[in-house]
Length: 184
Image (cartoon, rainbow, N blue to C red; front, side, top):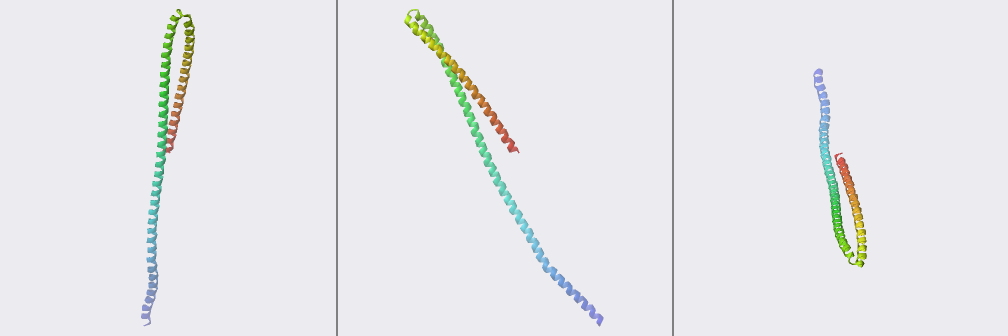
């Protein structure tokens, strides 16, 4: 019977060892699986939080960029409006100067006719001759001053046009730089 006891005792001991090992593995396995699942769940939650933060940051950056573009557009429109107003004012001043020059030309022509009439009257009245001569001298001085003023106005107009051209070039350069910056 000794042999038969060995056949029962050894398997029972081995069964006990196996059961202890299995029980140890079984209790730790469920805890490990729960820990793995909790870690995966935490990774997903962290990933979703990071995506939400990145989306929020992208929205904030887009809004800031939109504000900057809006301010630049308003500044550019204001600059263009000012340049347009300046050009219009320069054109009006040029027209005014031209009208004034034409008015002075007509006055000069009229005065020249008056001088001719006065010369005819000089033959009749000696006193009127002196007065007419002084008037002619005055008109000639006035005419030369008008011509000089017209030349000065033409010089001013050319300077204004040169300034407008320089401002347009500067605006074009600034626009090109802004476009280049936006493209980068």
